[in-house]
Amino acid sequence: MRDHVRFIALVACTALMMTGAAVVRASDDTASSGSDDDDRSASAAASLPFQPSDLEFLNSCASCHGRDGKGAGFLTRLFRGIEPGDLTKLAANNDGEFPFDRVFAVIDGRADVAAHGERRMPVWGDRYMRREMSRYGPDELNEYRVRNRILELTYYLQSIQES
Image (cartoon, rainbow, N blue to C red; front, side, top):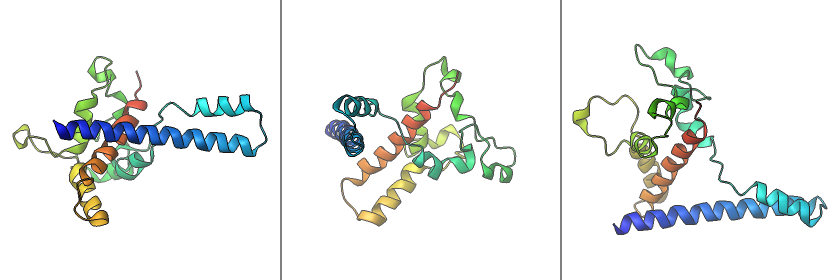
């Protein structure tokens, strides 16, 4: 339970830092352009909503799922009988509700039960953890870094949903 609380606190702090950095960048940009205070406030306010980046998706998912998430990545020609899936229809295929927890779990993959069948998608939780271990060595923040990357992907997928 303590780990869950620490994870939530880390995510909240990360979001606040990202928002603060966006506000500072927006206010620096408008200040340097000689705009008045109203323009600076409007620019900072426009940058406040969290907009997930597509960079993690492009690096980890687009080769199979396509840049647009519709399942036509350049590696699909190597698959035989395997459809990566249209990731823009996850909410539509779930009665209009984005299945956030399930998407997170599928991307992570470390908690999937082997009895549920063969897994064709890479276990990104393991891959990300290996990357973090090679970068930082064994430390307790690695799991938070991995979860943060998976959260970024999950939020991005939520942002590209179509009806």
